[in-house]
Amino acid sequence: MSDQFDVILWGGTSFVGKLTAKHLLEVYGLDKGLRWAIGGRNEGKLRAFRATLGAEAAQLPLIVGDGLDASFVDEMVAKTKVVLTTVGPYRLYGQEVIRACAQQGKDYCDLAGEVVFVRNMRDRHHEAALESGARILSMCGVDSLPSDLGVWKLAQIAEERFGEKLRHVSTEVAAFKGAFSGGTIASMKQRNKDLQADPSLHRLLDDPYALCPDGRRQGVRQPSLTGVERSASSGRWLAPFVMASINTRIVHATNAMLDYPYGETFTYSEKMGFRNPLVAHGLARGIDAFEAAMNWAPTERFLSAKVLPKPGEGPSEKMQREGFFRFDLYGETEGGNRISLEVFGERDPGYGATARMIGETAKCLLDASKDELAGGFWTPAASIAAPLIARLEANAGMRFRERQ
Image (tube, rainbow, N blue to C red):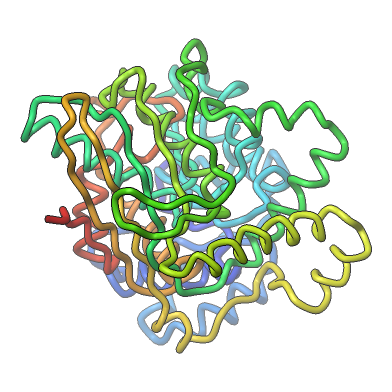
């Protein structure tokens, strides 16, 4: 049964899992050289979803089982070259899949925006993945591909044009129209539970180098991600961005994994930009209030029941189509030269765009030969940056364009 499939999409009935299946079907079909299947715990839900995909998907294979059952996971992983999983929170539901992939030499990608989970999995399974040849990639959606690939692209421009490394990059989230996913909210709630159980995790979460390889988890002091400030590059007012604490860790991990192409004293900041200072200050206070509410049981229960999306829920098709995002990256080289890049994406960031991103990530992993990319835990930019950017621009409605 080894390598019966090229890709198994695990979590095929989750909201973003369904969108990912639709993307794979639209771009790659079932008879265009990609052998893939969808999997999950509930066979009835899998069959019902498959029926919505039309006649072309009638023969789409289904994999049914429990992702917490080590024996089942071992059997599932043995059937494929790549596991693409949308099942979170990954701290609860993703550990067996990574273990099996690392042991069996199978490639893996996920949407985990969970720093503690990614760090723990690397510490526990990196050596096994190195030995087996498994390439393990996390954070392959809107957190953190625009930031990770955007900084990598800026570094390529700096090297080609000036022969210099980057000194600093500031990412300004200029537009972000869409809803955060129920899975992201579930991951946030699980993070808060873990912090209450083990307050020492605060130190790991506060470390900008937390996801770097062992032995490279230190560096220069990084800019603060809190507070409101005025951008010298764009004139915008910059407020905290909720995903910056995740995205900054991936950017620094890429730099360390590639032996510091951005420089060993590289600094990186990421915030959300507004023209109106009142809006920026209001957002900053709103984020603080939301964090406090999510850490107090009565308000957390109310928000979870009445306000926040639940796993499996998401925006309407109209909202997905109308959503988009734009990240403006401003870089300064070690020689003082300035360059800028726009990263733009169609569809709402948390669902439609993210589904396309992880689908193309899985295809890039499938295409990357073991000779070109060794096993181990990687970031997307450290492993498959160039082919992934090309696929995202061709198939995912994204663009990486230098700003003049």
